[in-house]
Image 1: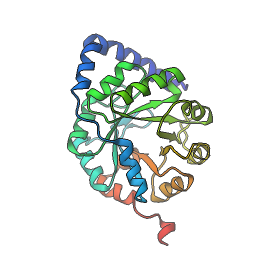
Image 2 (image 1 turned 135 degrees about the horizontal axis):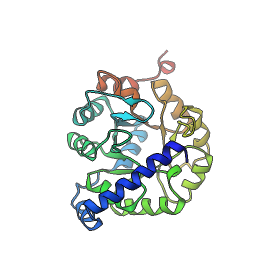
Image 3 (image 1 turned 120 degrees about the vertical axis):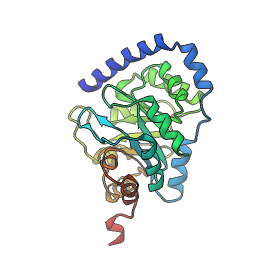
Image 4 (image 1 turned 90 degrees about the vertical axis):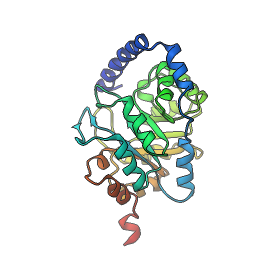
Amino acid sequence: MSDVLKQICAAKRKHVAAAKKARPLKVIKQMAKGGPAPRGFAQRLADAVAAGGTGLIAEIKKASPSKGLIREDFAPSALARAYQSGGAMCLSVLTDTPYFQGRDAHLTAARMATDLPVLRKDFILDPYQVYETRAIGADCMLLIMAALTDKRAAELAKLATKLGMDVLVEVHDKKELKRALKFEVLLLGINNRNLKTLEVDLATTEELAALAPDDRILIAESGLDSPDDLARMAAAGAHCALVGESLMRQADVAAATRALLAQPIAATG
């Protein structure tokens, strides 16, 4: 685990401890039961791929630890509608506050503004957070293998499934991929960003996709800025992509999303 990830996880554990005191597990469980019916996140992606398209997960992210503030005029509802208008199949919303300036309310607002399924992008370490994720309306939950033991990852995934959510398990290298494949997971995210150097290399997806079983839905993450990038990932077997920062920085988010999903130059030239 990188030093940055260790810091984030340490802060997250303190946050969860405080949340448990403010809103006990019994209460959050009841809130989870009263949450809106889950939308099929994995199914939406599978349908897009079956139709010959890209299963784009468009991300709503206000800031990041490495880049700072990404977008000043940050309105989750408007961004969600823009993404849907541009052709995104699903949404991803950052809810971590200290490092990404996210809020649970950002996810709830984005989901209410569209009919797209929504992924909660956060550092999920504790079963309490799984109930919390369902309570705020998320349809899918992220699990980062670099931050979890095999036992805890399997436990959290099982609980999320029990609550009706899909699970996206993120890996960064061969070791994490091997660990992730020990338990049943349909959505496999391959992050092209090196956690130690923060450098991005699309070859990461190409390398790991070749080792993944054919029955998984592969999602390329980080460093995807153009139709050619998406085509390169699709050629490797990752027909879905999670894209955030490159779209969030554009004045016209809907137009930028449509442009990203356009036919690559190589295919049209």
